[in-house]
Image (cartoon, rainbow, N blue to C red):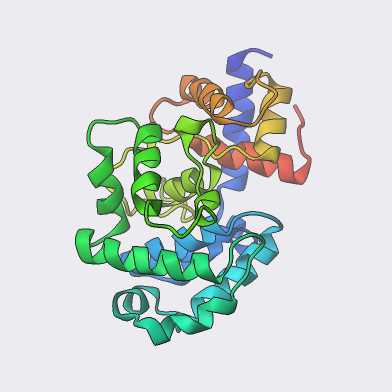
Length: 256
């Protein structure tokens, strides 16, 4: 197929799946439970961090996690004392455990005290760098005091050839704003054109069938290859096609 034909198809699929109804069965439902920027950031950060496995399980675990914060994540993070963190000790989602939870809550507390928001924290490391380097630098700084190496598994590093899918998904949620009511667009200092595709099995499979992705392995090289192809279709907002590729893959609906 020619790129023009692929673009036409994906534009249709983008419009089909970039709908408010999409929220109901997707982890992005979690930050949509809140209206304050800080609450959206924090709940979205943890929902994206837990985004491994079945979507309904991710949603339920995220809701449980936030209930331990009295469903008031920003105020909880800012005010949390040692005793407040004890209930998190028993929290488990796949390889994410209570020690990971407590460590990240403490780190977020430090971030909000120092930077005021997660956006400002990432912006501090962004400077003139491209997003892959920003994510790698942020991860290294966030986790340099992490106990052992366990917590480090939850965040990919593009410079180590990881897809960094969960961080890229979180960035899509925070940065993109096309007025459709799915992504939030509350981070104003990053541009949609800077984003990279959150590559998962569905997105990768559809992209390979369409000929947008040649690389067989899901890694950062594949992320870069696919994002480059998507930028040829929309340089200003290439990651809007995440809706099209993921939705088409989940529904098994690759038709022309």
